[in-house]
Length: 99
Image (cartoon, rainbow, N blue to C red; front, side):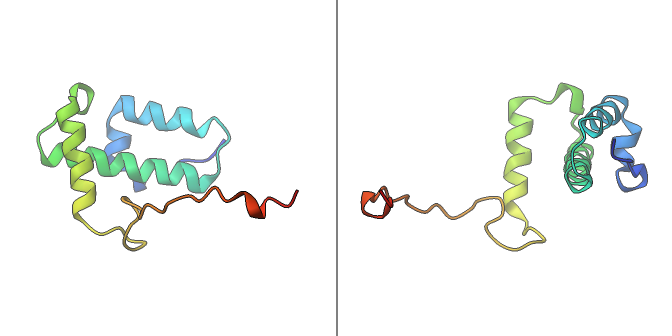
């Protein structure tokens, strides 16, 4: 089980269903970095909800779409194209199969 650092996710910690959800994820034996990423993402979503006066437990499709749109409007800390990766065509060239 991964130890959770609730001070990093104050809104997650304050909302019982969010806290329970992240705790359950930590019981799956996932890597600490994965649990931390889940916690940061949930914290970001709850911050969005609070800013937009959305009750997370009753969020609609429109609310989720608005959140996803919001994600695309600010740069990711790891650089461009993190949320919307550039699409590359996949070639199915059989000449390099090595048969």
